Image 1 (cartoon, rainbow, N blue to C red):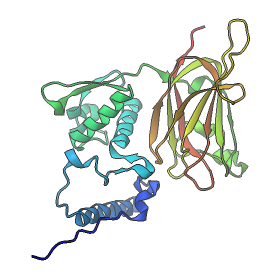
Image 2 (cartoon, rainbow, N blue to C red):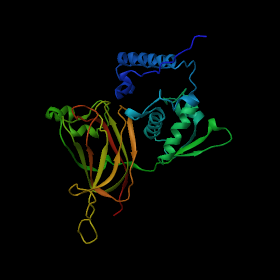
Image 3 (cartoon, helix red, strand yellow):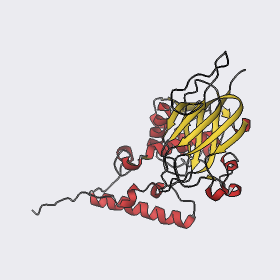
Image 4 (spheres, one colour):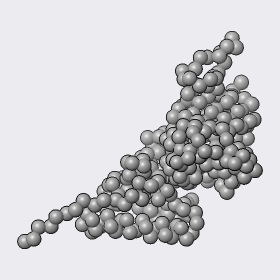
Length: 305
């Protein structure tokens, strides 16, 4: 019998290009992108002599997870699910996977309709580890209940002042800071070239920031977001000394966005209230260091006086 020498499958170079896995808004581009996805899956299966894909086992395979670009399918679905819940005001609502995936009245417009329940289960487990969901499992795992617990509100109406590091071509009308919080996904803040870039947001009163929502443009995403709060004053009027070398600010947390166009939600440890926040983008997925943000939302509580 002739021996079959299996040649290891090599992913094409585009597999390591984050925008390749970001759904494109232009219909013609999106259709071509889907075709390329299909071709990649077929080539992968052919190269590995794989004749079926088992959704229960293969979600953790190299086909659906690329460590080079920090892309993991389940994490993407977790972000989509949580964004859908927030956008529709369904926080503190108990619902089932069946309601989400079968197009019931509760979730008739959900992108999760028709998705295999196993994917939703994996997404919910990610949300649970982030403290965004509580899961109740009954005798039927496919119909397990879950609760998204979120009693905070948007703080953007309380913003007093905004400052950004730069604006592309100094065109504040099209790319200025006002578009960060205008709620219009067709407008954006676009920085100039160079790193780092930053956004500073100031409130009239101190607030506790517990969630940060950001919608970047894929390919122009901050590789990380360093979040700082203005140094709070003590009871005698003096300022608490910061733990970082950022004048008048102390570090709150460091976030790691995915390089895509989706609305991403991050949790922050809201131990103190701050009147001013600084979001620093040390580097960008764009070669020239540009940052593009279509939507920024700050969610939390106003500190009691």
